[in-house]
Image (cartoon, rainbow, N blue to C red; front, top):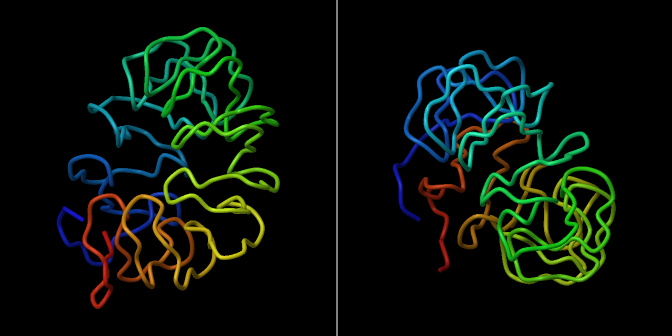
Amino acid sequence: MNGPYTVGIKPLYGPDTVGIKPLYGPDTVGIKPLYGPDTVGIKPLYGPDTVGIKPLYGPDTVGIKPLYGPDTVGIKPLYGPDTVGIKPLYGPDTVGIKPLYGPDTVGIKPLYGPDTVGIKPLYGPDTVGIKPLYGPDTVGIKPLYGPDTVGIKPLYGPDTVGIKPLYGPDTVGIKPLYGPDTVGIKPLYGPDTVGIKPLYGLAPLRGVKIRD
């Protein structure tokens, strides 16, 4: 894994993040979590600096600009309320929204919203009848950020057999969704993260063997 070695990094989605640095962009002083409290003057982790940008996963987002695409007027959060006319953050403007990380899909629904019948995974191969990773039980769903897994359950939901949530309780033997297999990795968005290193660019924990 390439990137600087950072000790004591704080989770973007957890407690106060004073001096936290974005996982997907340049170092930023005083950046606030996109998924937490008020974010006055917050800068997008996945795009150019934006003044007054509002979190995609928080309160009303009037005039919010997508972090992963061109500026969009009146865009609504992909993971929140109804998304009529919403435009994908990772692709061109589309009617009825298409998958951000995969092939074009007709009638796709947000992974983080209501029931998603016939939705296809954004980060993996096409899947029939896949259910949202962050919703109800998902029988036969395949991980979006790792190797195919039979019977995997939502990362943000109930207990799972074999796989453990990156954003939940202690994750002994869990494998990172955004990188090579790692032993003893700790959740970036969960409990205390002393010495934890992000899966997006930083080096693994000392003594941890990385398997390509």
